[in-house]
Length: 140
Image 1 (tube, one colour):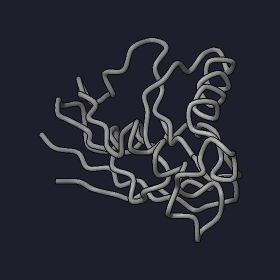
Image 2 (cartoon, one colour):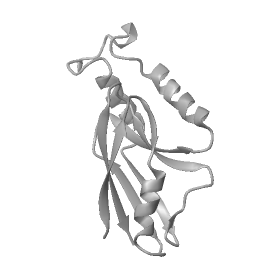
Image 3 (cartoon, one colour):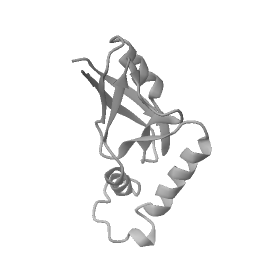
Image 4 (cartoon, helix red, strand yellow):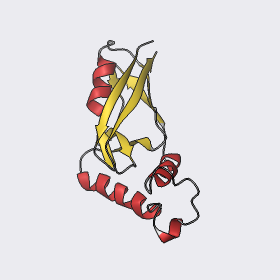
C-alpha cells in the first residue's frame, strides 16, 4: 500500500493548499478506485477540506477561529494552564481539537473524488513558521 510524507512550510496562521501534491501522489498509482487518508503529525495544526475558489472563504475561516479561540494572553483565556510555549500554543491545540488531524478522500478512476470547489488544506494555528508533515496513505 503506497504511502508518502509531504512537508508543508507555513509562515503563520492560515490555510495552506496541498491538493495538487495529494492528487499527484494518487495519480502515480494508476486509474483505480480506493481511499486516500491524510494525517498531520502535529497537535497544533489541523487538516480541512474547504472551498478552493474564493480566498475570502479561507481568510474568513481563519478570522472566525481567531475570534472563537483568542490568544493565550487575552484576558478571556486567563484560565489556561499550558502557557510555557507561548500565547499561541494552547489556543492552537484547542483549534486543532475542534477540527481534524486526518481526512479520508475517496479515489475514483485514479483521481481524488473532491467536489468542484473543494481543496485539501493544512490549517496552521501557530504564529511562527513551521515545517509540518502530512502522511498520505492510499489503500485499495
